[in-house]
Image (cartoon, rainbow, N blue to C red; front, side, top):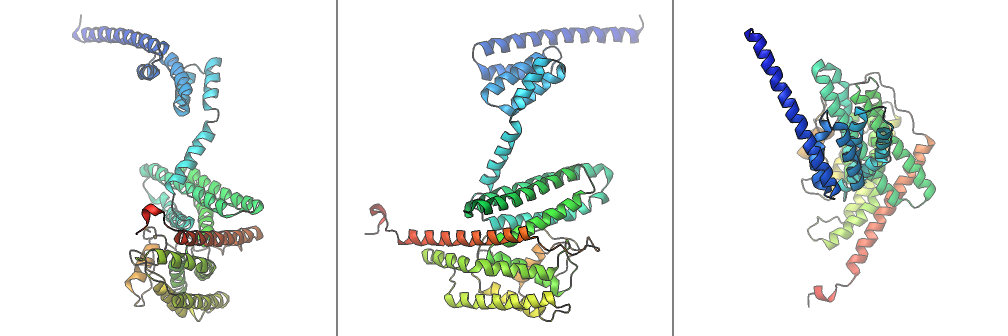
Length: 444
């Protein structure tokens, strides 16, 4: 026999021996797993049977039994995976089809319930305005990155699109706690259903954008554009007054420098909207802060005179910005910037040197940014460097359509709900301060 032929024969004998030993080991493992199952030791039975699901000799039977045990233990995800493996081994088997159908029944609803609970837990204690601020910034970053996805090397496009799609999916979850907070603030059922419908539509658009990004569809950028509009609209209705002034500073700076409109919106109109958001929520917010400061002596003071000064400046600012929106050659943009800076200086400082309220999320720098160079404080420059977004992508963008009557109604409902919620929190804190201490906590 030739040497090569001898080697082939030897390999064949060894493979046959290994296959026989493997088959014998699978039989023994199967018998052991069944014995453990019959003895009621489900945990050890699963540990023995799971590796068998991927064998040729016992894969279908082991997968079927694992699916049954996992389903009975309430692990629907694991049961569905095992039932799917059993079905792939016997695609026409009626019992395998029934088991798989039973395993996935209600699975989508269970996944959504877990997703909602996880999102609510992660957002616990956060103000909805702060959540929307982070969501708005993330939507703008995604627009910038998705717009340039085609410029990457072909071998990296798929991996990049998967990462961006995962971020868009995470962005869609930000709508869950916002919806929950709004529903808790609105008592009118008809108004609540209107708002819930709007939020659900926005979340659906965000998830659609995530799917389109994953599939590298050209429509992904347009979908993200709609998502950014949704985020910005709800941000203006829920944001805290200090954040409104920070965002207003960025928008007014861009309007003053005549920076190209972002996503079809006028920077000057955005600046006006942020001022109106500030004025709508400032009285209740100032009252809540004042009561909190009385209980916490470490909080910076916010005197009645400062509050009155801020209110007067905000009224003047809105009038100036309204004139800038209506006038094709706005004369008072620089004065608007001065007022915004003065208001931000009067607001109580939070840790890090910013106005009182929720901490500002970190914001990545966009490309092609323009920064205002007018000798302002370093704080203003830092805000602009963090928050101004890339604005040079759609030179032919048309102006955003005026909001519909339904959207205007939702805006009004949300503002009233937020004001009512702020007032309720302030009253609750006031009652807690007036309540006497229990005897064991009194300083006798």
